[in-house]
Length: 576
Image 1 (cartoon, rainbow, N blue to C red):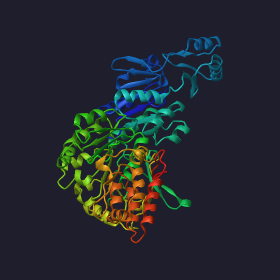
Image 2: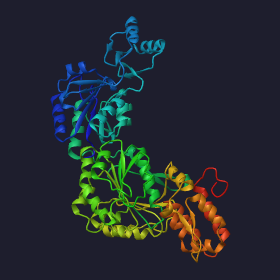
Image 3: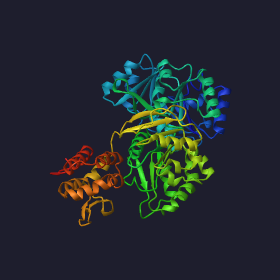
Image 4: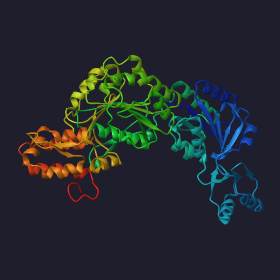
């Protein structure tokens, strides 16, 4: 289930002339029986609302006073989410003859034509207050308080993400909370400006429109509504004068990222994780080889080389709607890692069913974690995840039933046709046509199985591994991850513990030593395996393969490639 919460405005959305009809009440009852959780979001005060609508028990929570108050119908408890209105403002408005004037726990409300009078009183008193206009109503609230801030508090209390929420409304003060919701719906009688900004407009007005929406939620979870404003950027296609963005849905995308070693899979994965995070989605990354030990912004890393994470630890962190997780399996014996993942998957897949998150499951080294024999029941659980990314260098070694669940492929590096053939063969579909030539660094082949493959220029991460750069440029990698200049006779033992010292030593070693490691491909192998930079490794591999070039020339080219991507602080030579 994608949508767990229906956030609904009251007046002229749920209600007509202040009253909710029997058909609308019956629809709300049907919605509750599906396990979904209705939340009422209104500008009204709680006392005024209960007088007109005695069935608040149908709602898990009520956001009242335009986001300033949270009411719990089950306990009949009210919590103010902001400070009470200044008495001086209330007195001034009464002195000015503002009528009607309603004072709630936080809100002060009147109607037009008193808008200018209210603004003047706020200005004269030097208050930090905001005025919200809504179909003739004039509402005064503390700055930053609106229906979106109130709904955010309600969702936090319910432990549900805004990305699992559908919102429906009709008027100016609904813009904020509708924008917050994953899917925004306007009833047919909504203001034109509201209808234009929503993902769906009902065919019916007011309560009948809400009934229509609830029926669609119950029937198919709004599977037929493509919320394009939420799509995530992959890259661009076409030339500069005709460049077009390539995007993909954040829900229902099940993607394979594949290609040879050092081809850029990690860069594509890092870019996608950054976009997932920036868009507010949460992920669980299964990291069997500890390639993400530095973590990803906004994510907790659980487990290390000495200790395996427990299922309870992972679930506890994931149940916080604001937290993504990297599950480091280095502490699990290598042969036991697939079993760990398969045993954990049922408990992991239960979270989206209950809370709606994590929104994405990302599995690195998928050929190892999901080999032939991966349980069919576990394969079905993969479909429970909103989004799925599998990363592998051996797509032909991933369980065929797993491959058959996928609907998109990203291929990087040389020989993309071979990857597509392996994928198509496992999925039981035809191999696509098109340009299947080798892909240069930064390019990829993107294939949605219902379309033809397209060549895409990856949009790189906006904050391209800044911590990664600092660590590998001037940090200390440790002996196991360092580069050793040993030479053809194994007479040397010069350790470069970071890229700065590597460049400095590269300038000083003799020509025979330099060429020995160059011809063996040691430099690109180290950059890919220890520095975790597949793009740089691919570029250096091209230098290694340029046989016949002088040592001075290949040293210069390798150094310049490193300098172009990394900056070390206060170094007199090497990296600048």
